Image (cartoon, rainbow, N blue to C red):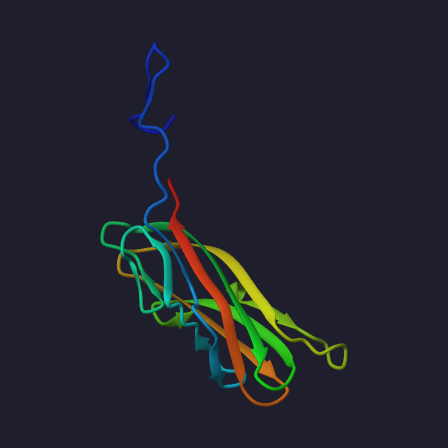
Length: 163
């Protein structure tokens, strides 16, 4: 039983559960085009579907004051070569402007000569222990046979875990 929780003789339960706030979900609103080949690039997430604490802005979630703790994040970026097939696709979260360890990267790749990929959706999920003021951003990269890369249908969502 959580600290402070009670059950009365009438069967009424008090102080159980909680809310997974703050929480947010943001999506891209169109194609992000002309991205340099094989270069980590921040995904532009221009549409907030919801944001319980007004903590998401400029494609970035910032942990509000007094809201440090464990957070669950889910993310995806679709990518494709603008004019040629794609060889690899990566996605990862950045914490305070730096990539999380390669252990958190999501990677899709082809072995040489097996097939040519196009429109790859690379997604991931991670739990992070964050402090107030920490910020999270979604980055991706793709390696194409030639030319530039397009990102589309990207999303980033997250919520504080009830402890």
